[in-house]
Image (cartoon, rainbow, N blue to C red; front, side):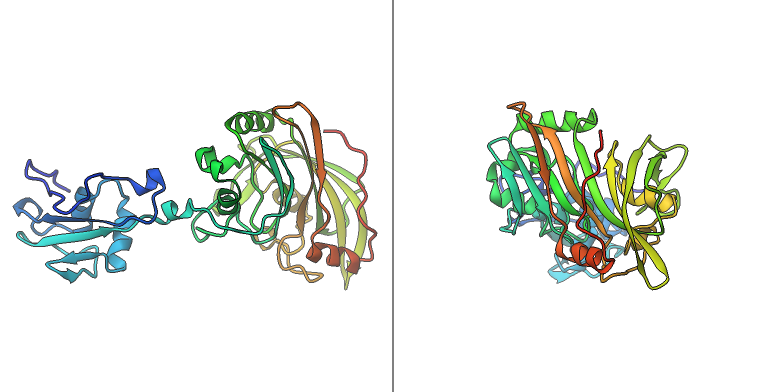
Length: 343
């Protein structure tokens, strides 16, 4: 059992005048050092537990990572193990490098394909392989990083104004709020299903001419990186329209047009796989590479919404990206035409 510190708890001997929390403030460049003497209460206790007392604003995992990179010293020598037992009288020093999360909230000059912009709203055409929000394994090079460089005032907005996202390997249209008023209004529109989103995709199998998929979706009970159709999930509906069928060897591949009526994570990918039509190259849900596609063959091709300030009806179309257009052509299919649909 970890003992609470007595009145003579570790004292930050060399801390700066202003203590700061990198995870809360987003400060990424400053490095603060703290030192503390091990007293009898902490004799024979683990190093990482002691560090939590010195720097309680950081997670234990982050503090352990600082040990691994040599930022923690005991009596002037780098510590090599989080489980190392301390001895009374030792001096412990830690350099509080900021977390990966705090470093992520940085402006980066990135190529953003912006198709519309005014003082309140921005619409961009996201490239394949670009992550929307910084997350584990992708702390830089994201849409958010690019937005912070393009529109510095985004730093004062929730998630830099991003109100919805696309998967890393899904291409196409995304809308972003540039003012707090717009972010609030767009978020409410999405919740009220007042934003119209349509996608183009390639899937294995012969899809019926028209198919409505009403199937609840939630996090998969076994694999946390997947979503699944489960009775306990949230109501989800996707309308699917077949645009044409082609063949690759012995496999049939259908080009489809999908209309979202809800916005669950991985919704189109999950719904089509559930019906037995996995997306081409969508390894997570059973689709294998084909037609030169090495990422899921999914493109957010149309986006429609009411301007949150002017009230103007806006609609944007994005052409197929090169890889998907090439796959489309290999099937011998004509350029996609938009069936008449209603949201």
